[in-house]
Image (cartoon, rainbow, N blue to C red):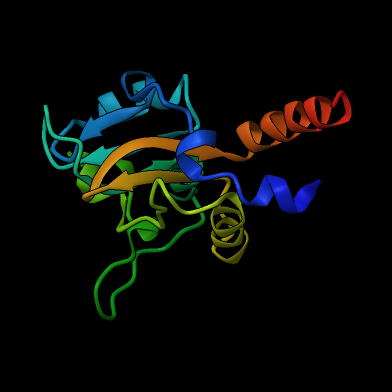
Length: 155
């Protein structure tokens, strides 16, 4: 049963509601980022308004690292975004993690899961021609697997 589930293409598992994805343009204000993070646990960062070219992601964990009062500013080399303070940021691109791990619509669930495990992430964008067309989250995978088991046992 699990091997059959692994073979399902990402496009058949992903959340197809692109309009419902947490998307912001890279020049969005930090206030807008934080506003979205009060509802969602992440926000995908795209090149510009009206464009879905994926350039980054901001998660609750990124914000936790920024807010952490124990982080110190690095005086050697380039500063780490986690060592700076919230007041120094103005735009989403300044705090996003760039070039997020992604999968293509025709990759199968096994490939997506392997990437999620290898990179220790709970969500992966489904991207076609560098544009986000959906996402796969761990919660979705659990729900889809439960549904898959039910339909497989009813046959």
